[in-house]
Image (cartoon, rainbow, N blue to C red; front, top):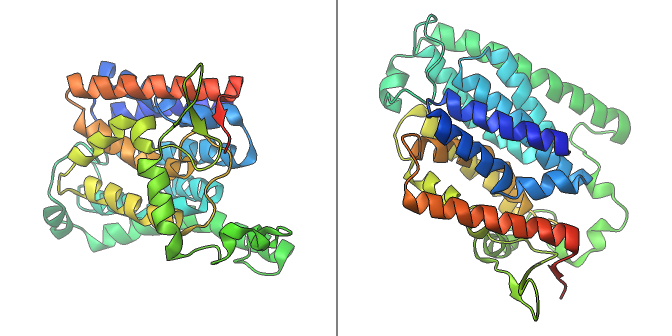
Length: 320
């Protein structure tokens, strides 16, 4: 888990460079991804749930990096399937990669790169799309995506009798837990999840370290990685931005509806499903340089996550 967590830092740097970011800025943002977010905590935790996040980020960053550099759609499809098989909600990040295919189909075959660096408005790009080229690119992507998912469906059929049964609902006694009284997915979970993701704060305690995070329920993403707020500034109307924000919105649907709060964690671990797409949006917002406010946000994120590692190693948890 730690090795893949370290690899993710390198991949974040690779992605940022592919988006035309200055090397110094790319380096800083890669460090932020690795040590100024809860990916640090998940990598050291190494449990089944957290390792799934770590590995899904590896494949997601690989897929994004390949797309940014004009990589073959077959490879991109394989990487998207891999990230989804680690964390199923991440399959809903497919719109970003569909946008990549449309971008490729709108440009000459001799110009495969540039996704994320060109500013062509989406409507203009779509008007230039070659249907035949889009079909060819889409078929390669579909094969890369579809073969692993088909094997997964066969695996589920062999072990559980249904291609759509993942085994989660078969855990003895799980459905008897209070949190699942409204089922696995329900709109009643949305307020609780939104609170955990954006408003959850630490608890004040007597003595060092004076504040502690709850073992259950997470901690606001605004506290753990405040620089992600700079994603809001990425508002270009090109395929890259539209694809990234659409992926964020779709992935958040099952995350917000799901009954499980995430177990023992520092930060809101489910938010990591959208981290790759928030990261590239932040990269685009800060590609020309990091100003004072962003530096302050980066500093806060690094301090908060160092405190989170202290929670892991020294049991600085608030237990209610």
